[in-house]
Image 1 (cartoon, protein in one colour):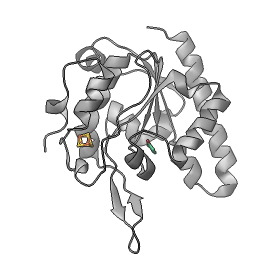
Image 2 (tube, rainbow, N blue to C red):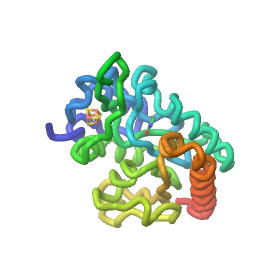
Image 3 (cartoon, rainbow, N blue to C red):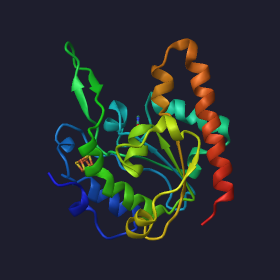
Length: 220
Ligand code: URA
Ligand code: SF4
């Protein structure tokens, strides 16, 4: 399959984009998932948060970051002084990818492949064009690699204020030029050993604070 491009309508209206994404067949992930989970938030949001893909609960609810990772994110945002309602929240990949547990019916998250991330990228670009945020926070490597390419290393750039290549800004983002900060995914805090959780959360909060400071300086 050739990616989401042909499914993305020429509009800056988020509701129209979300309706169109519900029909997307740009990669194979639509088949097993319940529904596409498009971004949520106001088109006037100055901050855009990008996760990896919807999880089990997001897939059922049709909303991003409403499960355990969402609760952790909410708490980290609060500690960093960012209101979730001031942010537009989305994912690099719009359909949930999972496998089944060997016994039982539990759906286990699977990491999206590079080709699925690339296939879904036109939706993310459309959201960036529609929202034109001052600041983008990539939560985890999948989001960061969607914007900066498959060889981007999160650990090397964590917490830095980055910018996209001129070519992407001009051709894809149509002149929007957000500051971008990359940090860990909230699930990485939850998954880590329990004695490192506080430290991991503090790291996430520190990056979000740096992002907030960058946004204050960077208005387009
Ligand atoms: N993890 C993500 O990356 N996104 C969600 O929406 C939920 C969990
Ligand atoms: Fe389309 Fe993205 Fe869903 Fe694949 S994951 S079908 S590209 S919306």
